[in-house]
Length: 83
Image (cartoon, rainbow, N blue to C red; front, top):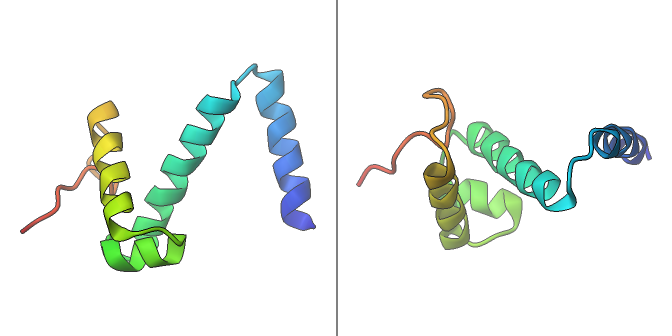
């Protein structure tokens, strides 16, 4: 229940700031993926497994985030996949 209370407080803040649902969802997903990448040392397969998505899905989403903006160099979304 603690998480629900924290989320409700955050949602109230966001609604007061007139943040639209699509913007909130997109930002949440992006940050969630970034944190998971850091936790799994940017290993795509492990990160995807922990998120419950396919590795290709994760790769595509990371690629989209890279094209949307130029993240800080310390961001896991900044690094390019090495072959």
